[in-house]
Image 1: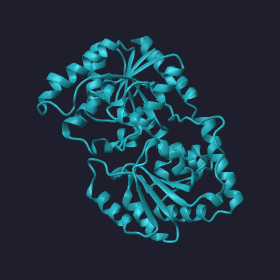
Image 2: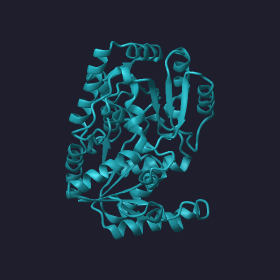
Image 3: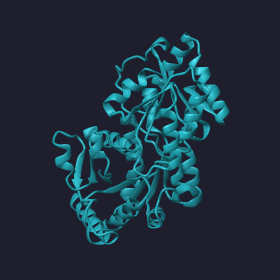
Image 4: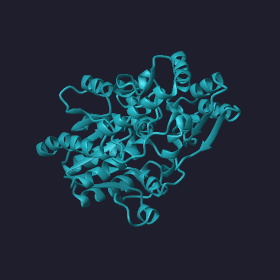
Length: 376
């Protein structure tokens, strides 16, 4: 099967640059490698100049389209962006197009798929994609394009059951599949560090509204005796409440703002943490959660962003119903007896190995796409 997607962040991810990269790019890069390993062909449409920027030796196939920094406002979509994207897609001759991260690009790729007479499949990457929050952060024409594309899609790929249930109510009859995110964990992965070697509470993400930095600030204030290490950087469209929270965190003596962490350094950063704290307003299936579990780090999260309640059901940390309980959970895991903690850490790593293998998830993805391609 020939699978085509689009993403303008993956070139920065492949170079492991200090650039605010969203979870969809990270997830997509894992999917692409797993699909290639399984014998399928996959490629990414991206910005003009990306090939020279990234250099040779990459497993992921990049196809250049247009330069997003050039062109006349609005008109550029019609005389440059859409035609060049369509031409590049037509030359690749895909069997199916998959796009994630809602916005104008969703509408463009749905239009491209329509022109090529192939299925367009949307990968839901946030709970906000499927409910009344879908307009958050989008201009009027962007959410209109996304809304139109959802009606054109041949099927949806969801990260959790909440997303599936909402879409099933909105689009009865459309194929909707729940496929959890994949993550690479070597069979001989290093065993989790013992509790005595864990020195802080970790927080990881791009500094923007959905990540709820004000809640992180309040919790760090509540526990001055606990060390917090916060990794990330401001997004380009950051809101004022996030800026204020980051400034507040910078002033706390028990908080270390470590800046953006490159992909190569995420595992060492997480492996020495006693827990990963997730404060988000909403997620879909956070890659940071999987990255923490993969190195045996328990997750402390809010119940609404515990994907399919995996943390609660598999006892992988704490899944708190409210802010008060979230704070209590941070304290409980921080003060957990060492032997109990070490058992928890091993359970976290084992869970990921068993349930999120890229090989298994790639098979699930192909099984979902095959009938759509056959029908087309």
